[in-house]
Image (spheres, rainbow, N blue to C red):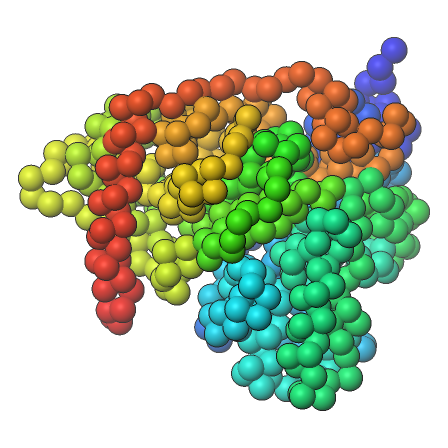
Length: 532
């Protein structure tokens, strides 16, 4: 007989997953059957400090503690029980970026997030050195840019990690990283499932004349794959997480992962020939490959699944932020008229209006560039709406143009993958806020990628649920299944979600839209170059 949720928590069999997203830190508590039984959250925002996007360490820890406190409060309210023991914990966070520490464990410069685009020179040089696309946001790009810029702190680095790796280290004492997140620091070799030895050697030779006392492997986290134990919650770590003091130490913790890896787990997209698209504040697609690509592409990042399979990733800095800004405007208009509507209903109304627009938006175009967009070569962004006098300027076409614009850059990257590399995919899953309104986001993405898109009811659980699943895989995999089989058989048990196939007229319309979009990119570039 299955335990009730209260009994699961009281017996210490619940599993906790926490993910640091761009705008929200979320905690999900799951039972041994992988079902969510409680949640907590904390809202936060990055800050632009000295020209670089960052979150302070104070914000990281306050956010984590407030998120856990919200979870604890909700558990007390719902089940009248304290969380004292857990079967496992997992931490994940937005990938990449730069967190260097000295011998005293102090961070040496403010955390430089994935959003920063100041690493162009370093990324270009490393891409040529490795004959491999090295994105601007990867940790190795940030490190080498700091070296090129002669930043004094570099000589004293003893540890370099990501946000997930940092939090994990502080609560377990272990300087480790899941292979998926590690592959966003420097490329990982799928055969060895650790940092590519040839590239590490090339980098060390490149910086040797600088005379640093460290080599790259001296300062990078140890790489672990899904299912491995990554340490235990220390007494200090337990108090860092639960300031109330109820949570006991000794809980096993799984390898910390990036949000890309947890998205793959949460959508059952870790098997080769599967893929997923995460569409929220930023967006990215992950297609698990059967074999390496024939050549490097600047718009395709090569990372791995949490168990080490090669993945082609298209990462876009922007997605729904500009849609959110327009919805806020519509909300202000509603309030001026005295109309009350919930945020969910307002989004649903607007998205469904967009679904009625012309397949090519009648020439209307939207650039959602709140920040720079490396895929299209822009280091800064200006949200922009463009139309000509003869276009059919209707609300439906306007909204549809915004919905297309949110995934336009994603389409540009994936067109290379599917049309030039002829990659085959059996299933693509969608998750994130873009898919909250039923069917509409799926319809748009299916048109963009010319591929059926599936969404599960659990897609809204997101990465916190995904890292909880990976923590569960570490402690509850009695059959010793490979991760794809564990997800298929144990977690999802045949559930493949609701699928929407692309309509030919939508595919043709989106193709016309994206050709106009690419042709008008100089307009966006001019807007970026204009300094107001």
